[in-house]
Length: 174
Image (cartoon, rainbow, N blue to C red):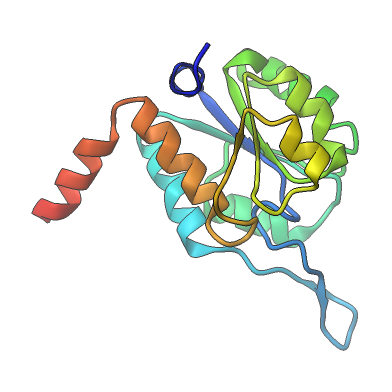
């Protein structure tokens, strides 16, 4: 199956957080509270995907209230935190959502994501992912995690589903 055919079958976009939705750097304030930076273009891409019927999920190995806040802001459909076995978590997400894992795209950057890569229908590595992850991906983004990689994926999915020209025309006519 070609990449456009794989992408056109996707019903749910599932993402890791650190290194995908963020650049992977960890910042702490003087009180030891963790801070994260999220890319607004990634958020806009997620919203466009959702507006066109796409479902969304996050699977992350860490537990963080900032991730819960961002997921709520973006109206992410499913959030699984503290999940080291991401392959098993993806299967759990399939049961929760009723969407087959083969109809899910998963975006990751490091070894914990490989279990989800093996199971999903479209495995996507961000540009700065570990080489072993990039080698096992169906697609490697041009953008790095936290710097528009998720937006790039959303754009590709919207194009594969035939929504892109309508989106551009609607924005141009506004």
